[in-house]
Image 1 (cartoon, rainbow, N blue to C red):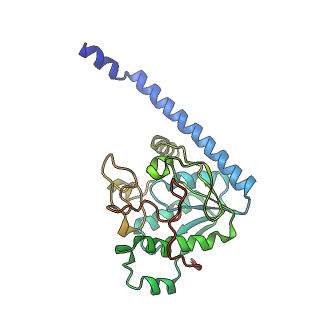
Image 2: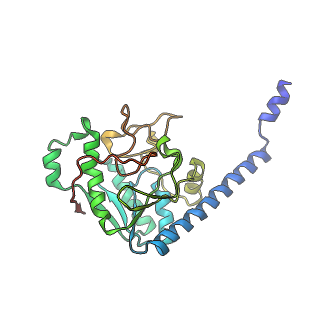
Image 3: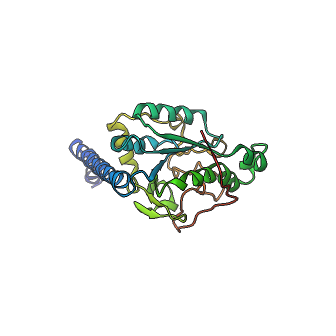
Length: 261
């Protein structure tokens, strides 16, 4: 009886191949759907009034590659907080060149505000929300004044606060947020990387599954939530840029100006 059970549990080579084929088909279908969403958003609904936000993290290559297939001149916003891993900056430059992205905009916090609110550069160690507000939220909000909508690479599986993530949503600032990869699975992402031979973030091999600023990001153990390494040992799950599952955004001590690099 145990042998029969074992035979049923163990997949044959044919079954394994079929599973791989189904996974590949699902990934391809989702890719087509994502491209349709991007074409609708970039070229039909919000032409000239929509941007793409990217952290150039571990999964960023997927969305940016899709963007390059649809519209290489789409504005891509990267927030340089001044606290990124050097590897992230190198990876950003590699993807820009590889995908031929024509309008990547580097957003930075205003130096005078950093001098006032974070003169020693250690605000993250005792007030993470305030640090994110100054270094991330404010620069992006100022930049977004010229856009009606923005595209993100968020996915439902990334953590519990994103499990109900829709493809289209209205954020608290009145902007339309587009999440073309919302229903993608880790298998879909992996399959896309493999199919298009996309380069991985150099820190991913070291256990970093979700990468933000260096002081607030740690490697993730096998089986942990992909974002468990972000703000570890705190209740914080989002930097304040993105709406959580209950529709709320933490926006503390916002600053109204930014410098563009």
